Amino acid sequence: MAKTPEISFDAPIAGQSLTTEVGNRPWQQPPRYSTVEEAIEHYIPRLTEEDAQDQLLDVLEMGVPVTTIANSLQIGGVMQGLHSVDVGMLVMPVIMEMIAFVADDADIEYTMGTEKQVDTSKVSDTKIALAMKKARDKKKNGDEPKEMSLEELVGEEEMATPKSGLMARRA
Image 1 (cartoon, helix red, strand yellow):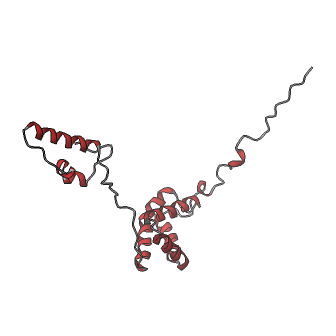
Image 2 (spheres, one colour):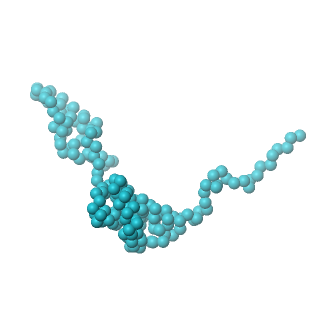
Image 3 (tube, rainbow, N blue to C red):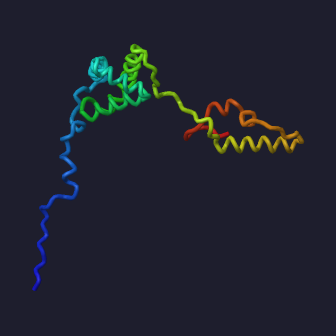
């Protein structure tokens, strides 16, 4: 008669070696700096150190936006348990201004990363439909169809400011 193997329930759970106990990570502990002022006092001296400035200027010269650098710094602070996520978000503008100050002081050109990038090569379906409707209306009125640019058909102000989002008005 064949024996059935005994099932052991003391075996490790699959993936258990990839995890840790709750509370062992730095971000799961109370933050070292609980106020915005304390967090600012942590970042400002570090951003004004000569070694940090050299690295910061190298990254800015490569074309990395200031917002990306500041966001990386504050996310790293959260992961190290320096401050909470909400304090990090409130410190972001101060970090960005400090980085911009360091770049201005060194005469380095930089981008803040807050500029809205509008791709004028793409035209929305709504604007194309509006332009077609205007062209059909002109044809119905007996006007001679002529070569018109998209800006003339849709309107320059509509081309300049794209409206998007959940609450944006539709044309």
